[in-house]
Image (cartoon, rainbow, N blue to C red):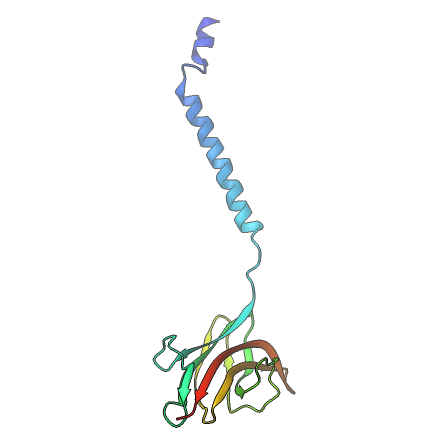
Length: 167
């Protein structure tokens, strides 16, 4: 009996500890992989409308002077992560002097861009805006989609606040 006891004596056998740790690591890894593969939440679906200056920076024209620098261009980009292609997408550029506008704006577009944005892709347009009357304005870029018969506001938009001063 002494020889059998000596061969499986846990105090003297370091291999048993190594095997137990290895089994625990394998089980923990399997549980972790199962959690991330099976229980991972679905990615959020969204679209984004954003703009950059004509130099492709965030140096936006927030203060302009009439007849000096009151006409400017912005790169407006729509990113689609909705899980489907946006066919017949329309990007409308609108300007309002309202201090607290509600969206979509109830004004006509100064510029309109039409296109298709595949899922996971971006769509960029160069919008030119002219503001020649002194005041505080919001330049709004609204994304509209078509259901085949009419345009519907998507709820996605970007705004730029611009103060226009007299020369």
